[in-house]
Length: 118
Image (cartoon, rainbow, N blue to C red):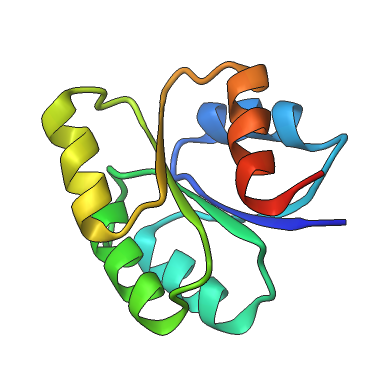
């Protein structure tokens, strides 16, 4: 089973992601960007779903570090900031795709499958 790192500081957003992912994937949570970097270094993940606005280290900085260390690990931005400028910042940081919150389960699963397959 494919393994996903969900970097999300908000409990209700993580509960939504749990609902979307639980039937199809194993997943772990990181509550801030620093924890996401540490888990990416020590875990065997197939993809990272990265919130952008998080405490300690934001998702953009965490993405830059993760992509430097693990260039083949897909990172998908998952954020409430849905402006074109936010999308561009996410891609500039190294994100491979971008999903706006609240995300639909169909779009989320379709995006994940694009990178990791079934």
